[in-house]
Image 1: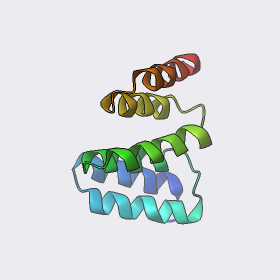
Image 2: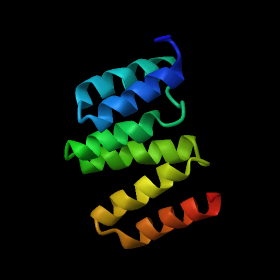
Image 3: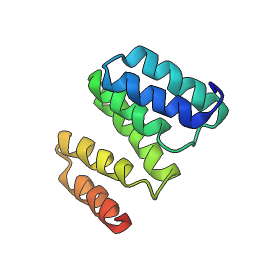
Length: 103
């Protein structure tokens, strides 16, 4: 069912893993139109942006995911990783600690 948000997210993840970022983004955008704060939409968008070399945009998207879905551990880990890449170690540490509190 193409209207099922879980299916859209699963398809986006599958295309992301195959490095087909364009099609992955299309599935994410369709899901985002229906429910912008649905878990993992911004997470995968951030992963795609990072893979395309857009670190700042990736961080912005990951921060949205962590804020909108605060119990999604992987979002906080991704935020930490992105801060680590930017050499913002205190922010990275804060994000990793947030992930630890969830786990």
